[in-house]
Amino acid sequence: MTQQPELKENYEQSAGDWDKTFAAEHLNARHVEACWRVFQRVLGSAAGGGTAVELGVGTGLFTDRLAPRFQRLIAVDFSQQMLDVLKPKMAQKGVTNIDYVCAPAEALETVAAGSVDVAFCFGLLENIKDFAPVFREVRRILKPGGRFAGVASNGACPWYTVRRRLNPDAWYWQDVHLATAEELREAAQSAGLEERALTGWGLIPSQMPDSALLAPFALAERVLEVTPLKRWMGGLAFRFDAP
Image (cartoon, rainbow, N blue to C red; front, top):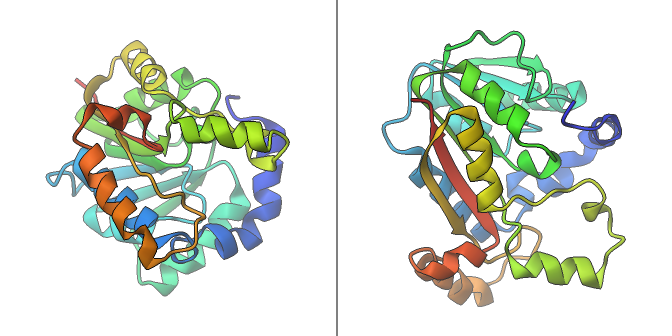
């Protein structure tokens, strides 16, 4: 397995309290909307209808926004407890087109080959040390022309290096692997996926309290996203397509 058993246990133990910290309404609003904006841009406005798979869905950061765009959404997580939190949330919001699958992202045995139009993920890759099996499995389930899109923390961002040096024993660093653009590109190429978008985004940390003082940083994000400096920003947004 690409994801370690102890990591799964940690997520299952924290599932009941996860949304108290990591639900969209408890994260920095500017960060959340920047994430949503850049994800929509790389996914493309034409993506919709058919079948989608959300990998590492957790308790559903944007699941309620994305599910209505498709006829069917398969929500995948290796933690049954996370799925058990997600189900009533979606029912309460009237989202009824979701199938819930407890499985690791690299072993989607219940998803038929060539049956998926779009696969996507938010924050999954931070928990994956070897991207290749996941990308191969995504390639297997995608239809020709299908899309794999997502966002992840950017391992090339200097901020993470500073944070790790300041607090090297923090829980966040114990199981986390921060992807670089080169690693994602290599995994995609080895799986036979074609690059459509791979870009940096974001300056405002997700856990930072929101404030009007952050408005200049939000503006700076948009400026930097169209310059070569985007490679050093806090997140990566990507899209790779099946030929």
